[in-house]
Image 1 (spheres, rainbow, N blue to C red):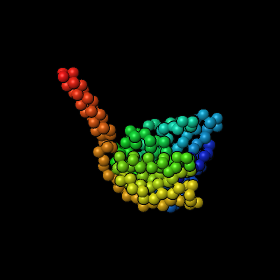
Image 2: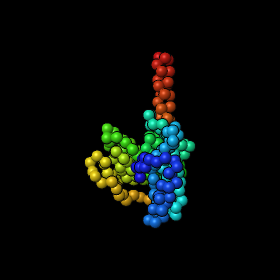
Image 3: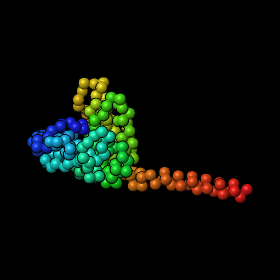
Image 4: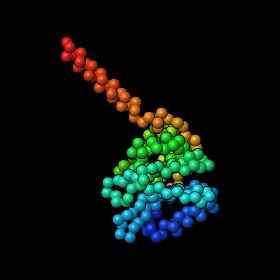
Length: 217
């Protein structure tokens, strides 16, 4: 599902989860449900994703990085990771993809497929959909982004677009994609920006040596 695919009050949460479990078990599929849970006074709303396995096991993820203006509470700082018959699955939500060190958790944990519910706007489509592709390349996983009011995409770990669907140019609401079920290990997922900072350090040393030689002259 996309981000906020269903909005409901907390007291209805179990009912919708049970319906999701029934569907996942009956169809023998992994189901990711993007839901926005409302509190009575709207002070502790939650932007969530529920990953349900074919056996009915339910894992819960709470969005970690809040878009300015949103008021829902933040998650625990951990990417949701779930082993499956299709490799290791990871789940984050929309804004989380732009926090590079956070997403590196998935690369370090050898996630094979990242599932990302999203909710965007026409003014940032398709650009906002292209940016997360770098996370797939950096961390060696394939990625599926289900986007409401935006461009849904499926890319492999090289960043190749395998499928896409634009809400604003089609009436279709189901995107189908065939993606690799096994990811790859990447250097970046292990060392991050270490090499880039090393280059910066080398550059500063070169400047320092140049000034030193200039003073001697």
